[in-house]
Image (tube, rainbow, N blue to C red; front, side):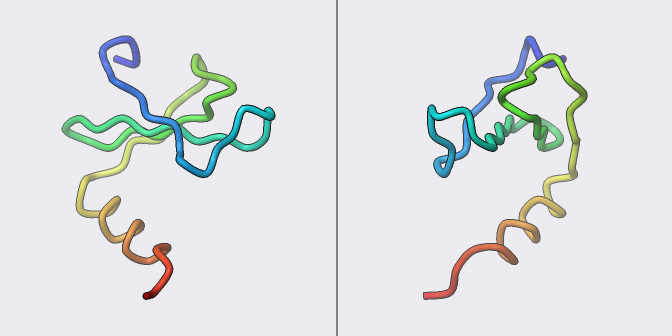
Amino acid sequence: MSDQLKWFKSSYSDNEGGNCVEVAFATAIHVRDSKRPASPELQVAAPAWKAFVSAVQPEG
């Protein structure tokens, strides 16, 4: 399924080879390591992803 998804790299990632996360939005939210695109993906239900993003966003 990865071939059909449009992946977005985290805005906090850089091109220096550090820790990078990519996300693809479909029926579920897909998360993977951008340095290893063929590795397994984490799939999360949309409500769980929304709760996660809300919990980690800075206040203000």
